[in-house]
Amino acid sequence: MLNTTMQAAFTRREFVHRSLAVVSTAATIPTFLHQSAYALVDPDDMPLIKDQPGIPQDRILVVVQLSGGNDGLNTVVPYGNPTYHNARPGLALRENQVLPLDGGDGIGLHWQLEPLREMIGEGLASIIQGVGYPNPNRSHFASMDIYHTCQARGGKGLGWLGQLLDQIDPTNGTSLVALSGEAPLAGQGHKTQPIAFENPKLFRWIGSEMHAALEARYQQISRDSVEDPNGINTLIPQPDNPRSFIRRTALDAQVASQAINEAVAQGSVTSYPGGQLSEQLRMVGAMIRAGLGTRVFYVGLNGFDTHAGQAGRHANLLRQFAVAMQAFYRELQAIGQDQRVLTLAFSEFGRRVGQNASQGTDHGTAGPMFMFGPMIRAGLLGKHPSLAKLDQGDLIYNVDFRSVYAAVMEKWLKADSRKVLGKTFRPANILKNV
Figure 1 (cartoon, helix red, strand yellow):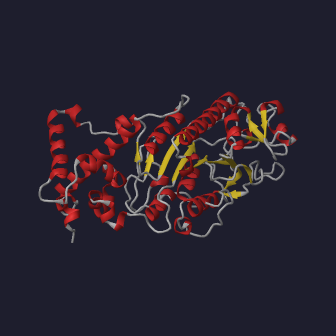
Figure 2 (figure 1 turned 90 degrees about the vertical axis):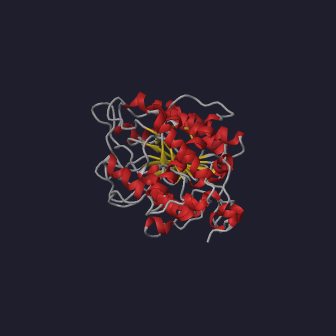
Figure 3 (figure 1 turned 180 degrees about the vertical axis):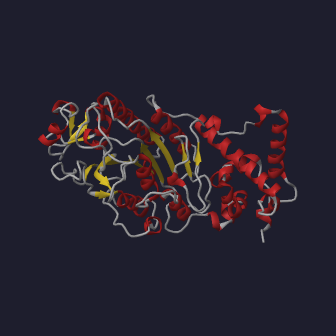
């Protein structure tokens, strides 16, 4: 039975601020069945939505997807190895185009990654070398599915982030927000479904632009849901009550839309460079600053499929990536939130060791992952893949990406990675004692 405190209706402002952690869009209707009523109660009166023991509720994960297959060899450059130069007579970076790293021993960064090198010096960035998986797939879609689901054969199963949030987020609401347009497969869980948009202004009800009658009916649904004098019971969507279902869905979508738009409208306290990734991270920073209850943010940068004319395109992409990440952590430091935010950046595969006839590189296998935040072990981590021992002209991985995921889940978010990965992977040594 719901007690009298739970039956008290909230004002609109109270509802917006208290319910963000459990609201969602129409695409996530199943999550409302068991959780939507809890959005209307004071957290002090409802233990089911308080912090779960052992799970740090204040920690955030940001995932950056570098789509297309980033060329790891021209990102983390083995400039001291003659084999690299012989394999890439037109693409290999010369020593004066490489930023040396402490302890790199002939390995440095592409010259456009100076902001990343600065972050390494500040203890805010690390590069995990030679990340991949057994029996690699060179298809963009299949390999990306493997990284999203952790299933060796890919497929359209549940995502690793969705299953993670099923486990650690008691509300299963707006726990994952994707700003790269499409909802990532990685965010699909049993109960967790991501909210996805590119422009928060488009994440809104547009009925008023279609016909005044639609707007009037929508507002009536929302008003009835919040101000119903009969109490909270009519706000709980019942499986056998379609009208209740629609009312709850409409209200949830409206609240989520309003809260996200209000958060993004606050802007940032520091400046960001232009570019696709910078704008996405600017919005993430604004939502974190506003105190939204989102646990995972998903952003992306496209264009890494450099089959032809790679040199200039790749340099520009690396620059966008580096300046965006530096600006993001400058913002987090300025608003006092950097200690809460761990960022993981990955690509679905690397490129082949040898260049092709079009001054580009074709689909390969292993490549680097990147980690950001004051909780990471800074610098180059792991061994650079061997250029002497190849698999059909491709690099052989040294670090299974699932061990990186395991470290994020086990060490940062204090979750059981075995429940997500299906078996035990030893967490990679990439984080400090957190």
